[in-house]
Length: 136
Length: 136
Length: 136
Length: 136
Picture (tube, each protein chain N blue to C red):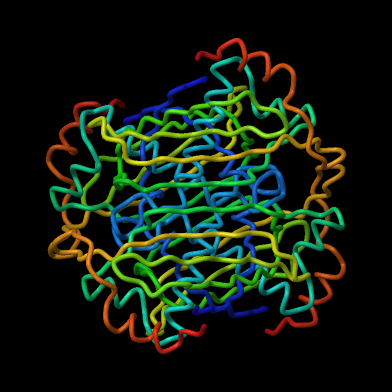
């Protein structure tokens, strides 16, 4: 298991008239957390795309346990439970400042060679970093 | 089963640098389709909120089968398979102009009394319309 | 002067907790209207990009006269007052269902050759269509 | 003059298929910067709304000098040049990591009493903080 935590603050643009974070905006929170996780192990999603590998999303699941509100400072925990092959599964746990779990998420992404447009293996550099940081 | 179809065109703002519709934007397509379905049976989500009932989302699932592109005219099919009680489950099937299925979605929403902030039953007016339009 | 009108309905995702359309979302309404205008004269912004010309925005101005609300059916009027050269200026007037003017906008876009990344002239096909539809 | 700087990183969701930050997303960057500025002087826009004063935007101007790209770490400088009365004018200067000025913005907001829905004066607490930090 590899875990990582990042924080982000809810923007006004992300709220809706219910006064909650709009339910479609969690997907971008997951993206921010995934990319911050990569950065924390000296990898850059930007560089990965520039090297010819992109990671489109295949599947998304979200459970809305409690709402998030404007200006909340949220903690997004990213969890990788399995060593990736051509796909990588991320789990997300979002807690608010009171420490309450408000959201559970899950995304499956696939590594795609941008030239051939075909799935490919997890790049060696990412794989080795994940393995090096993996804990049982 | 109750089904309904609506169309929407992909906006430039909804694309990302991969050239695809950003994966977080499907949630708003589902919302547009849900609301259009209500409108088609002379109901208005806006009026429902004004009458004191809101419908926050409890759960979201998305399968990204093929990408959607800028300017694509998408058809979103909304399906209600079960008579709602305090919760209502919507399924979505998105096809592109070539008729290819590109996306499958599912959302569970709960009826909430805005005053008590507690779950409540599906409003009678919505329930009767769904039942009247239900087909086996 | 060349004018064109299109309609769009405010989405829930576009509201904020003030209960208004978030002020940053008008820019995407302008984009929808510009593209619909092009489509109305048998042009496609998508095809223009595919032919190697893109139109990044240089300048944006917005006046928020009255708020727009969830589910409002807005009319966006697009106005071109001058024959474009390397730049094209669009004005926008948004009215709500009551016919009230709620928003004024203005964008300046530049034609850019995607290969050279340099400004270029308005493509002949667009120019001739604008001229053909121009009225004093 | 009162100035403040904050940093933010471009999200994937904020790019478009041109590979640039979508032109409508700068407005939310301005909002993030305004709110961070308030926070830096121990004020909270959230608390202001809770106390019954909201600040809708009256006017927005943006100049797109150079594009911003995915993953760029942008610096947003907020400038208040005049002591606010019922309106407050913010200027924004956005620079990228290379120190290049890429964007100029301007927003005029009005203080509104949420009960009466009428403009009101800048709250004393904000006014005194701005005055205390004002430099010629």
